[in-house]
Amino acid sequence: MSRILRWGVPLVVSGGTLAFLLWQIDFREALHHVDATVAGTIVPALLLYGAVSLVIEALSLARVTHAAGSPLTRWTCARIKAASYPLAIVHYALGVGGLTYLLRRHGALSISRAAGVVGLIGFFDLGLLLAVTALGAGLLATQAPEVRASLVVAVVGAILAGLAVLRTRRSFGSLDRLRDLELFRAARAAPAVLLLEVAVLRLLFVLVFIGLAAVSLVAFGIHVPLGDLVVCVTGIALVSALPIAIAGLGTGQVAFVYLLRHWGEPEVLLACSLVLSAGLIGMRAALGLLFAREFTREALVHAAEG
Image 1 (cartoon, rainbow, N blue to C red):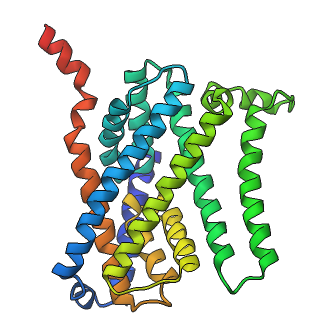
Image 2 (cartoon, one colour):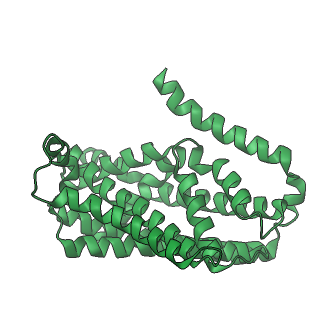
């Protein structure tokens, strides 16, 4: 039953939310907004995003695996990250599991240490999404300066506090067993300078995604003020990352149309969201197929030697 729910719920959520949107919004009218001019803008932006984001992923993995005691080359990290993309499209947890498996095999890491590498990067991604959202909220003119400052300080403080708890030698009683798990080794053992490097890389990753969304919106004639753009795009990313839908399909479109409703017609927003999602899925699926042999590389080598 748990397996059925794990695979069935994302299908139902994606299908249900998309059906709801298509019931509310004229899909044919949305398609009319997709033309060669839009494609000529978004396709190059997607290709550039795919290349830059994969480089950032490779650099991040290379730095964290070095801290975990089993350094991998940046090229190896790029290959295994790309190979895990199709699994992440099906389900976020499946993508995490696939990347953990490849890290374990290529880096000779234990399963818990490999999961710690993936988890540390995921922690930075979530924390920086929240921090950038808070910063974007601080740019909104509708909020008082003291509210903006307190929001940013609170989010950044919470992220730093979490890292401090993991890295301090001070005893926290029964929580020490949890903190000392091999899963958190990368976060505990990595030098502070390395953590700062990873934080900068993941911040760049978030900003590149915001840039892609901005280009896509402009391609459809939608112009959003900077503060609202940052808040809305990071909010959409957080909703899309929830493992309750297939690659964020449906949930991402609902968030996209709702959060950006003040700057565009529903049909235009739906078209933009669907084109962006389809482009990201297609780009990642193509990269995954290109490097799918990473899952069978050792077996092919042994077969060739035999």
